[in-house]
Image (spheres, rainbow, N blue to C red):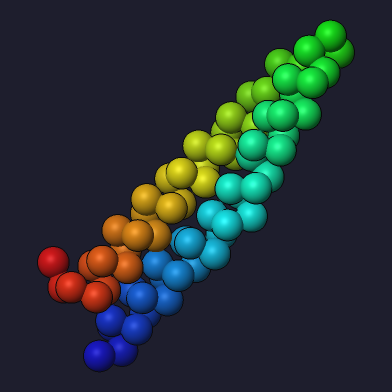
Length: 73
């Protein structure tokens, strides 16, 4: 039983990490596209894309881990 709780907690942690990333990534991308004429456009764009993809990965991994804890597949 404690193993299920640990896996469930791990899934919730993944989802908790993804929540701020879901807001931070698109905000950085928006800021990047508003400042296309600046010299830091490309590094900020890459940072925004990495954070956005990290949010998607954490969401996927968190839901997969929750399903593993709840349904024992």
